[in-house]
Each structure stands twice: as structure tokens, then as C-alpha cells.
Amino acid sequence: MPATRWEEEFARAMEPNFKAEEFSRLSHSERVAWCRQMAAEAERLAQAASPRVRAAYIDLARQWNSLADEIEREFNRKM
Image (cartoon, rainbow, N blue to C red; front, side, top):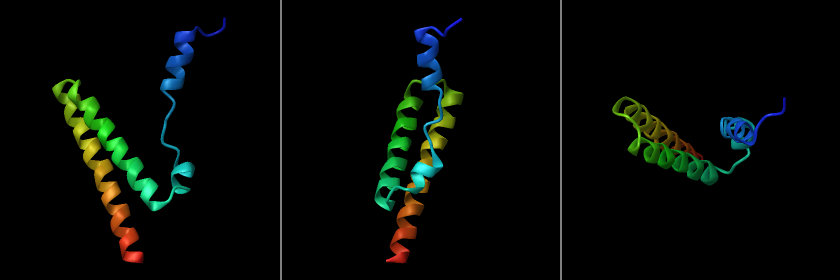
């Protein structure tokens, strides 16, 4: 039996968006921007989440921002 439209959309939405190979091809500034965007998305999701899940989203946002900071520091050290 073929998948319904909803099932197809759900499957597409559940695909992992982080692709390490694609990420590694980005410039340092693109990587930083991508990380900041992911942090902002996690913060947005935290606003509507239950307290327990909210804490996990906030931690995830902090980690994305930390990665962006580290990418910036590493790039600046190489300059």
C-alpha cells in the first residue's frame, strides 16, 4: 500500500538535516551562521516546550552557540 501524503511529509520532516559532509564544505563564516541559526531554532522551540523539554532545547542552543564560538576562535587563530 503506498504511503499517504501525510506519511510522506512526516518521513521527510524526520530526515536528519545535519549532513557532516555538506557542513565540512561550508566556509568558516557559513558554518558559524549555520550554527547560530540552529541555536535560534532550538531557542524558538524551547518557548513552546514543556519545562523538561525546554531545558534540553536551551542546552542544545547553548551547544550550537558554543560550537559557533569555537569555529570563530579557531579561524582567528589561523589568521
